[in-house]
Length: 389
Image (cartoon, rainbow, N blue to C red; front, side, top):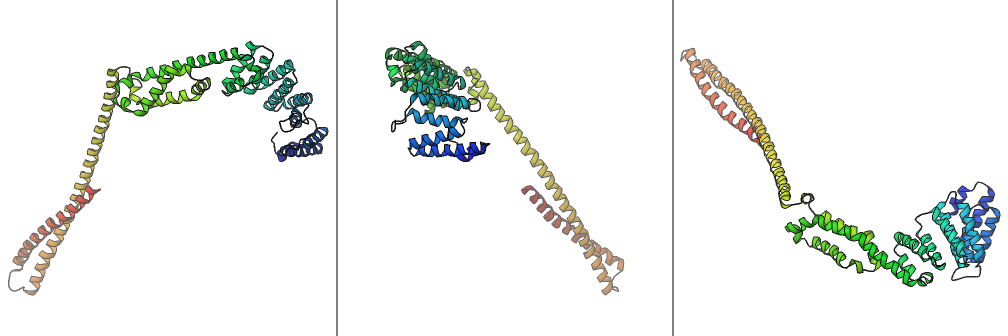
């Protein structure tokens, strides 16, 4: 019933429907303000204009069911009728809303003392929505009012399975209190059943990690692991005496959380170890794997170093080559250049061939020195530069 007016107008196909939805919006606003007579007047106008929308009848039924603040409009018979109409019009397209309308009709019938009709309406709600916890509780309540305890308790158990708070609701309800002894027996049986469902799961988890807990120094010294183990063992020792609500909360959430914590804390290599020898084999396999990875890494590093060294010596060879070229140039410059100058400026003093021979020898010495020095310097620079990469 909380749809906005704009959304309702969108589905309107005729001017009459639009007018009806506008009256319905007025009725909802008046209901929100606590103006119940005005709300009823507006919703009846909406129904007179267009009667096929379930929301109109749901609101009318709510007004006639009454409230703590205002019971002036209470008419349980009319409320039941309006809720049934709401369920009828909602059933095709809004099954959940139809289920709630049948549930409300069942409550209206119960309040009139029409217990058979109340039970029938409530069962109708359950046919439309199997997981409606309130419907199971209401069916159990009606069965209790009919003194049909054997039918009431299974329905109550189904309601509790959907929402544990129905334990408190049943304990405080007058129809259930009329059969207090049987209700207590039912709660005790449910308590024991819940414990019996939880205990094997916890025992299985503890047995699964037992070898790890007994043989792993890490597990023995880990405070979180020991706290988890203690919590699970405490449940096994005392859980059967826990209050029912605590047991239900443990079954639905806390138990799985504690078991998951314990199993997740165990290292992977312990998960398949059933004996110390198997654990040692698993540990050795892990160590061997790390050694093999280290060996492969060392081979890779050696290979990279050799490649780098080869590149460095290649650069060194290039430097020697450059030095040779410089040496040749030096020989030519010093040898033939000096020879030429000598011939030009002192030609008459000596035989030209002797001059060429002398200066050629001097040029060879100078070129050799230049080759050695430049080759060493250039080659070393290239070698060091390549090794630094």
